[in-house]
Image 1 (cartoon, helix red, strand yellow):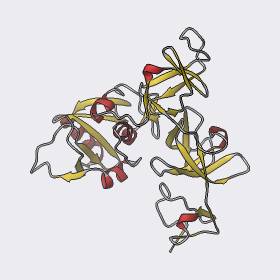
Image 2: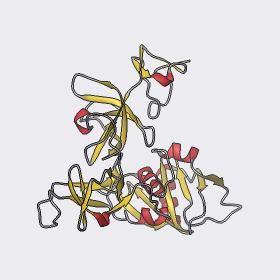
Image 3: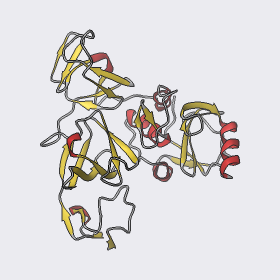
Image 4: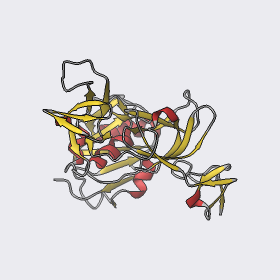
Length: 289
């Protein structure tokens, strides 16, 4: 068994003082908790490594995602694990719905869709939900779907069981979106979030961070033996991008501070000049049509 700090804290719900009950035989902690599964209520909620609003964002959880709470402090911060990708961290308790997880029926398929207080686009907007956010449709009225918060235009929703078919095309929709470390929406996202979001829309489960993606996604290929192709994932230390075609990389990056399509040769030259590093691996998923 290992101590509560001797593991990857990003994906292991364990601290020296508390750990998930299912880790009882793997980690040492002062106490173990079964946890309580809750649903995210806010459109997008930052998940942080510390229970402080001035601490950096590790990732975001979207409305309708399930989060298992193992601990809550006196300041109203909950510590737990995201069910979708296993990420562990702190978020404010008010971002969670009370009670058991809500049974979701639909996901947002537009980059962002508005919530109205009634079935009319002329009403003042109450909120906005990002791509991938989930909700339970309670009824439909004309072109609108009623959810707990109000009304969404039905054309911006898809049944949760429906899948996109081309993750490259999904990623391209985010072109021009600003870069944001830890972000996961069109208001701002990082390189691994772009990959995770695009793959997730196609029903392909992906880890959150680029090093975990490099370890777990697809199969490695040797570009010296096999030509690069559309949909290949290219990894550098701390970075990942998606090939739009054999010579163009689509990636969220801190150089343009956007999701941008650039000549792959230019990206490699720039990164090598700045860091001395080159591509660490190329990973290929199932063929993309």
